[in-house]
Image (cartoon, rainbow, N blue to C red):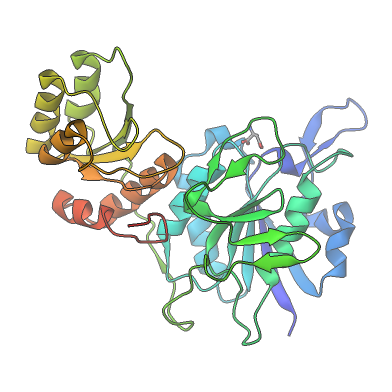
Length: 343
Ligand code: ASP
């Protein structure tokens, strides 16, 4: 049976080509995708496209885009075997992370991709990224099940779990990394699927549940030498903020000064959700290792383990949207919901 894939174009560099008249970069018409990328015709795959209006540079992404994407996937879920989302690279890791928590019970691939150079210029990385993403989205095993039923990012020969990925380079084609989790697939001469890293559904007949109510009252506080009580207070004690992601040093450490712990305790006592995420690219928060980490734990800060900041944000938006009880949110923050943490 021929697979059917929906390509969703939200904006970003990948969909641009040079206008022959004035040489400026403009988005191309994705309804003509097979003319622009004729290699796609060689797959035995039916490809449809959906273009967002307006197209956006991903620096302008708002959570409303994620709600629209999740709604589109829900509405077309039964018509397609997989979805490829073309998205700017700047916030791709945020969008892929959020979608991984919004789409619960996924049994089909949702693959984000983009490019560093526009698809319409000769040295583009966009064609390989798009072609391989479509091939992986359409790939099924001997039982007819999707090979990678997850929200993922395909970039420069690697398929990575969306909520484990960060953009690490503004220059290289190899722009994304998933430091704390191995690639789900690698494209060489053949596409090699890493079955032990892929997350499979409990049941292939489980329904898709879309969590599209997002509570965005989250702030991110990066700890740094020279930070003052006034700065910390703005983030932790503002009444309009329900949760704070505290980006700490190393394995979850922050300053041991009494004023800092006092503000943490004060915020915690008002019920604020405080999540400890490490500034390091690799490794995990462990608040039992050093006295500075331990005092955060005792003051009510929750461990983010090895979650990325991008995934922590999406996880909080979704959990807080699902429940007004901060105790409930804190309890679920410590659980692995979508492959985002190793415990
Ligand atoms: N600023 C662009 C964006 O993220 C860069 C890109 O497309 O890669 O939309």
